[in-house]
Length: 290
Image (cartoon, one colour):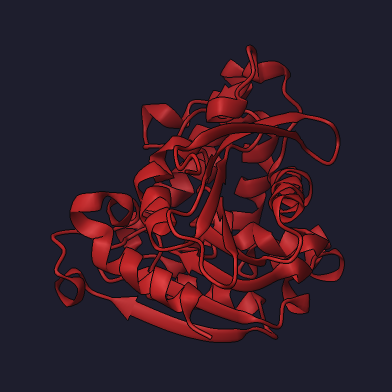
């Protein structure tokens, strides 16, 4: 009888940096083997997605969860010394995760699932061509102008004051002081904050991502989910991120908690079993659909 327990895995990023994660085997293998790679939100450790990964595994979908360099299982002793930015998380780390998943079963159907920032960076790697489906959960443009006034002021305070000041003082950004995220590398914060200042986010011409990236190369189905009680991924900001995948077959769903029998969905609560199971079932069924 096969071992269905989650297994610790390790692999190297495209530049040799050691990355660590967890493989969740499918409980029942269907006729077509499907593997989902979960790309975490900004600074969110992979272990946060364990309940969701286990649910997918019970739905005949194998799952790889992993941490980007500097986060969770891929943490370093001294974050101040880590060279890491937002682009590297996509072009090197996420690329390697897709490489690893494909190596496990070359003929399988690969699916990308990105939470928040994690959905935006699938387009940073040419490996997006291996994905046959892509799911965005609260994946948004970070441009401050797409949010309510209250969140906009909070966002502006972060990108213009707290992030540069605290990063300069500590050598990293202590996101764990203010959010559910872990501390972030200085290089990541500098790049991301610069993106958030521009209406086109990282697609602004000064960042050269539109020309060098692969968002427009993705032509397969994209399910983009947003929630009415999420103040950090508003409907407009999620629409904007989905539009960056301009040649994909986009299916947008904007849901309220009451539609899926949940108390809260928000930006994080959708990944908690008490709130997200109906949404999880929706995602699994969409992945399994022809």
